[in-house]
Amino acid sequence: MRRLPIYFLVDVSESMVGTPIEQVQEGMRTIIQNLRVDPYALETVFVSIIAFAGKAKVLSPLTELYKFYPPTFPIGGGTSLGKGLECLMDDMDQNIQKTTLEQKGDWKPIIFLFTDGNPTDEYAAAFRRWNEKYRKHCNLVAVSIGDNVNVLTLAQITNDILLLKETDPESFSKFFKWVTASIKTTSMSVSEQNTDEIKLAPTTGINLEKVAPREHRDTPDENFVVLHGRCQNTKQDYLIKYARRNQPLEGLEMFSATDFKLVGAYPIDKETYANLSAGKQTKINTMELVGVPACPCCGNQLGAVVCECGNIFCVGESNTNECPWCGMKGTLGKGDPTGMDITRGLG
Image 1 (cartoon, rainbow, N blue to C red):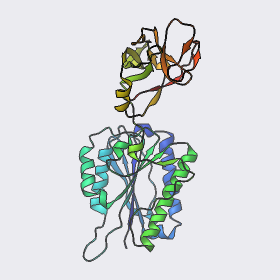
Image 2: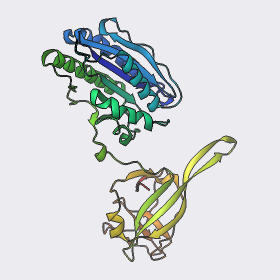
Image 3: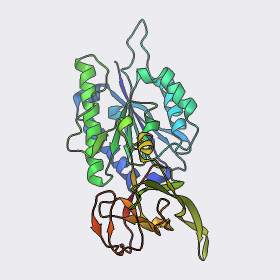
C-alpha cells in the first residue's frame, strides 16, 4: 500500500505558550477526528508530529491514521527551526518508503510547518540540506501564526507560505478545517488521479493569506526610527533620526524600558531618496520618541510637527502655518496626551 505521509512540524517555543499552543492542540484533535471519517484519508494517510523549540523532538512517529492519537504539546525555550528541519529530514530518511524496481514508494510527504517567530539558531546548513535533497520530493506548507515571522526566511525553503492573520479561537478553528480539507483533497487525488502534488483547499472566508515573499512588507530596523519631514519654507525634504535606548526602571533596576532618543535632523535630496527607497513604511507612536529637532533647512524650532494628512513638517513662530505636503493651513494645536501613530521609514 502506498502511504501519504503527513508531517506536522510545530513551533513550541515560549512565545506559543497559552492560547496559541492550546489552539494547536485542539486543532490537531479536530483534524484527526475529521480525517478518520474520510474513506480516502483512512486508506492512505499516515501522520507524524515533530515539535521544535531550542531543540527538536519527534512527539509521534509516522502512524496509520486510525491508530494515531495527538500527543500533548510541550513548551521549550528558543525557536530552532534548523534543528526542527534536521529532525524532520532524519525521520524521513528512516521512515519514508522509497520507490524501487520491485515496488512503488510512498507518495510525496506533506509537511505543515506552524511557527510564530523567527529562527534563533544557525539554520543555514539545515536549509541547504533541505533544498539539495528533499525540497523537490516533498510538499512543504509554511504557516505564519500571526504577523511576526519574516517570510523571506521561510521563502528559502518553500514557495507555499501562508499567513494566519488573526489568532482568535474562531480563526484557528477555520484554519484547521482548511488543513483538514487540504489533506482530504490530496488523499483523494493520490487515490483517484495517481498524482502526488498537494491540493490546497480554497482560503475563502478564512483569515488566511497566501504570501508572495516579494510582496510582503519589509520589517524596520528596530535600532533606529527615521521620520521623513519637509520644510515649510524651502520645501526641501529632511530626515529625523532617533536611536534606540534602554533605560532601567526606577526602583526596578533588573528591568528596563525602551524608547528612541533624538540623534538629529538632516537635509536630503528628495528625488535621490525616493529612487533608493523600498517604498515600504510602518508606524510608531509618538510617545516612544524623545526629543524634537529644529528644522535643518530653515531653522524653524519645531521640525517634527504632524499635519492632519499624516506627514511631518516644520513650524516656526508664525501663528498660521501651511503644510508643504497637502497645502492645508491652520494653527498649531496640542497633541493627544496618549500619543499618536505616525509613519516611520524602514531605517
